[in-house]
Length: 266
Image (cartoon, rainbow, N blue to C red):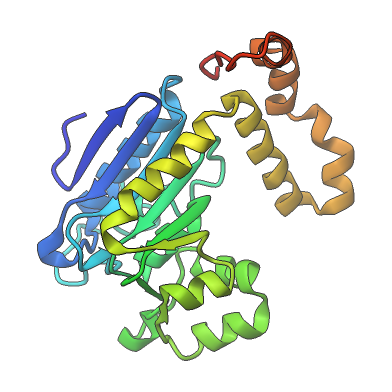
């Protein structure tokens, strides 16, 4: 893909997306948001891509959030409700609620405002030791309306969420891991190797199984415990898992004592 505000690299079944505005601390303006929306549209549509990694260029910031300096065109037909984002939201991710494939956030430096919201919208967060996280919008007269409020309550529970949201304070990587938001913290130089290790672990699993698992998780969020358990077998993703080739390949590979050869998801 031709891109201006991010770099896209594909290696096997893994797509790495690097926000490439280091001079702006990887803050996103309208054009960058629309571009990232197209990048993640492509990721979802390409059956050969199974896992994505999102990170930021340089060592200062994953993303400082919204670029408040660059004017946006509120009449842009791509804008969602007059905001400089696609329908899928900031970074093309925060409102992509129907996303089937896993995304890993590799957070280098600070993830603030929309940058933290983009990380929260990912499935797994790994962080450099220098990383920090904060929903700092109230410090500039705004609020975390890119899913940050809802997700931080879901992640941390109300009291810890209030402690972050009502103070707009930043949390270092070690504390974010202690609170359960971050899966792993590593020295800065090891961040991308760590993210790739997580991506490879996910890619070693059947992509159909991963897609079905994410669909069941979403049904739990949408429906609650009992309804999700009772209705999950009717989910298209679960039906596709049972009827697809990977369900047969997994058992066959186990019996033959070899690594399974998974199929691309449909």
